[in-house]
Image 1: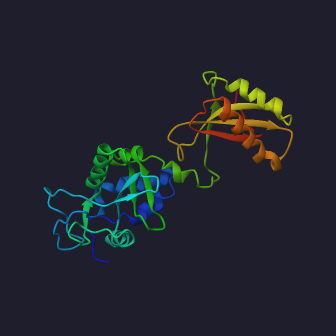
Image 2 (image 1 turned 135 degrees about the vertical axis):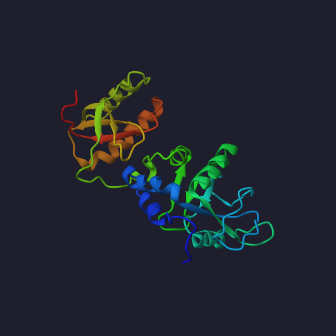
Image 3 (image 1 turned 90 degrees about the vertical axis):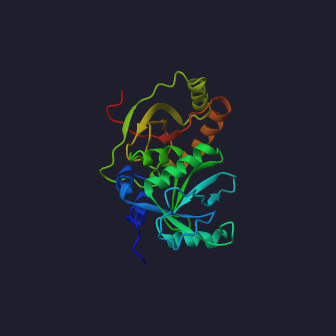
Length: 260
């Protein structure tokens, strides 16, 4: 592979694919020295894939469309990754050529951000499409990257198994402001005699979460074989009667020492 005009971010993107804050941080720290490649939708007449466009050039790149109609800005850490996407998507410039150009990472992120700002259908950034460890980044995550702030990529981080030294902050949660919540949970307990109690808590893991999320910990007389069915019944009833929070985890018989 030819020498890139900036630091190769491939290994760091692969690491960031885990999504944990500690895995994302090295990528964010390297962005000032790194760069990305774009597949050009409009030719800039560049002699090769490693030649940066002149500062005054108006860059226009190809984007990836999701089946639901949403669109992602596409960046690549290596030119051959952009070339593969061109083959898969039949991307060409307006005159039928296939061109790739490099941009410093912060310039590329700013370019992506302006596209998100200017078009509501553009919802995020796709890094290294068609690679095993491609990374989708939403609007908030893109803004944090550009500002040099490492945050968890929650969609990936929540899939990473917990390790021995991982910790989660737990505190009681006040849901009195959620209309019908308490009454609906009480109704659920009356309909499910094996459920004897519950507690609502807020959980936060700085490696996996941007903000705390709610969990309901159901106390039961039965074992794990009935957990899935009980959880489904709970979700069904709550969905009918309560405006559900954006995220509510259902737990069973967890013990939170020191929780008041």
